[in-house]
Amino acid sequence: MSKTALVAQREFIDNLRTKTFWIGIFFFPVLLILSIAVPIWLEKTKDLRNYAVIDESGWLLEAVEERAATPDLAKVFKTVVERHKKGGQDFEGLPEALKKLAPVLAPLSEEELELAAASAAALAGPDAPALPLPISKEKVQEAMAQFRDSIRAWWRSLPPKEAGKLAPGASKSRYQRIGAADPGKDAADRIERFNSMLNEGKLFAYFVIGKDPVAGSEGCKYVSKNLTDESLKNWFGSLASAAVQARRLSQKSIDPAVARWVQEPLKFEGKTISETGAEEKIESRDTARQWAPVIFVYLLWIAVFTIAQMLLSNTIEEKSNRMIELLLSSLSPLELMAGKIAGIAATGLAILLSWAVFFLVTVKLLPFFVKEMPDFDLLAVASDPLYIGSFLAYFLLGYLFYAALLVGIGSVCNSLKESQNLMMPITLLLMVPLFAMMPIGQDPNGTLARVLSFIPPFTPFVMMNRAAGPPDAWEYAATTALLVVSIAFAFWAAGKIFRIGILMTGKPPRLGEILRWLRAPVGQLPRRAAHEQK
Image 1 (cartoon, rainbow, N blue to C red):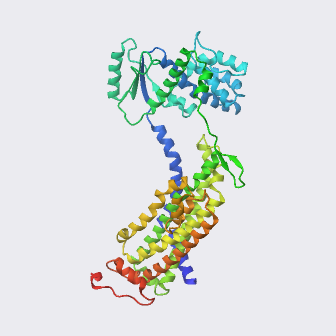
Image 2 (cartoon, rainbow, N blue to C red; image 1 turned 90 degrees about the vertical axis):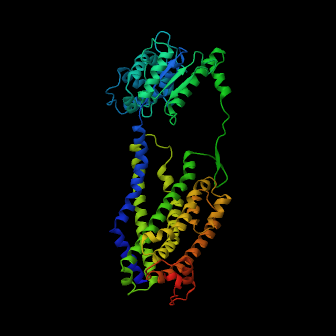
């Protein structure tokens, strides 16, 4: 045992000095940062969608822009209220109307802010309607009637980039309508001009609204050369449909409240059962906790595959430079193999510990970079003792199982190139839990999950995936016992192969020869057949 410990210590210290170890250390934090930063960056680099509209109805375009401005102005009002509560020191560049409106909006709830935004987005001028929905506070009604003309004019003239900074995610920061080249020309001339602009890349798309959209869709068109990105079409289409529906209800003298009641879908409130059998409301954190094991499985797969691969590379490297022969002069092959596996395991745990630290730091700092955080404690979900304990236990068990397989493969190969063919079956085994990850996450106690749990190569990943179920205690005990027996058998087989293959050079042995090694008594080296020596 002392010699095994010395080999393990040597392996661990040597790995600390390698590039592979530090790549493993920084892989996870880099992956975390990129997974957060890249989508945000890519969204910002997406080109502004310039579009044009030919409105033959005379009213629908204005109604669409009114509806588009409502959620955008709601975000603006929310930002203004937040700045007001911080002392109002950050109002530079905002119109005077918003500065005066801030203390009036501050007491409102989010729902009331949306109603105020709907009022600000409404048509201005002498024919402007009253507030679209009632707000109980008279002071707010008076303020909105006073300031909405200037707010609406300011918002329409605000550049898209400025709109995006003030109201992140606002439609105005993603879509910009440009006017017709010559509004006096008829529709055919304008369509010809817009087609030219499409070909020149100056226009992403244009819409044609028919003369009577209330009656039907005749004459309505969406023209674009981009056939993959339909976000603009869906956004404008949903707003136009809502405006047309409202006009149809008005023409039929149907009360909007009655119409909303008729169209309101039947909702089933989600419930779950606690361990005591009591009925509980499903919270977002419960759903997140149900899917958390899927993330742990993916990380477990990366950890086991990466660290076991490190053992394979290390074994082949030492065999190729004849370091193995020097080591075997002072200890047995089994001691050497056990020491190498233990040393790489310590290296893997060090890497996982660093990943955990980086993850905790990232979760703590995430609210400073992502404004819209989920309404559940992400740290509490990720640090659940059941998940952490299962992850560490199944990492060690999974690593030991695959380490035994890979150290056996490494002992019979002289180069990484030779090991690629023998690694193919192992890689296929490792891919199965990834393919089954989502189905098992959806049904952690189903037939598929239970069957795969009792197949040792899949047990660590599948049982980790089922942690949200969770499985019955007897399943934990039975699958763990079966996996431990499988690991013992894998170590026995790897030891038989390692003691012979580690000193063998030349052409790698065939599968039949390796099977004969398993049957050979300890201390006896089987002779290679003539056709296997060539």
